[in-house]
Amino acid sequence: MLRIAICDDDPKSLEQISQLLHAYFRVRPNLTGRINAFTSGKSLLEQIETEPGFDLYLLDILMPGQNGIEIGRRLREAGSEGEIIYLSTSDEYAVDSYDVQAFFYLLKPADEAKFFRVLDAAIEKQAQRKENAVMVTTAEGVRRILLERIRYVERIGRIMRYDCTDGAVDSLSIRSSFRDMVAPLLADRRFYLCGASFVLNFHHVSSIKGQSAILDNGKVVTLPRKAATDFKRAWGNYWLDELDK
Image (cartoon, rainbow, N blue to C red; front, top):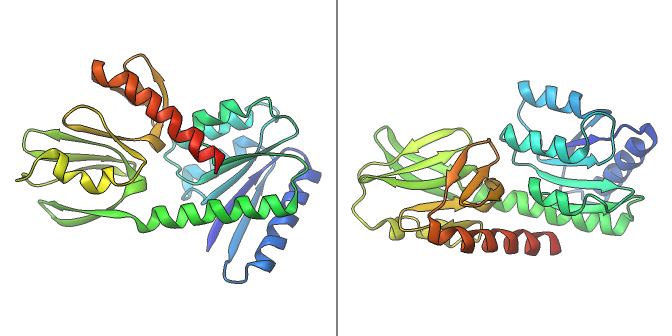
């Protein structure tokens, strides 16, 4: 079952989006969903502090207090990996939506056919992410790690360290090259090789400043000087391609 959050301070808009979602599930009988409505970003953020995050977030942009972009940033910092779809009466913040890896930016009132197409694509993307994983041999046994949870992978001596949204995982001593070990990750366009022993997941990079990549949990990763420019370009191109889909 899909868990969907709607956040809009306008009760009329909240009801319209909710009705669109119910109509969507009526014509997609193979899908089921639970819809939670929030009239403020504060109430949404308070809920995810005590419960798992949502699969989809439908966020208004212009709201009192924190706007939709700020709410999206807080969601990413909290480790939420659900797809964010913005709905707004203005396209003023469309570029800012890159910072929180938004899936799509729709103008209100949302056209039903386009809204349904965006939902189809977002749900398919979420499902693919949940299916993709790597198997890592650790001292405690074999671990299956979802690719979407991996922020980065680095070689530390003879082990591989997977920095994930739910903690770090260390492999046993590796017998192959780092490049060979991360080949399954590099086959996924979300991942990028930085130097000889570091791989970053574009989805967990919030911004880039000089040689520093700022991750969605606030951690700062220093990129190799020679790799920083190419990484920034690849990161930007990746999100341009994603938002064009």
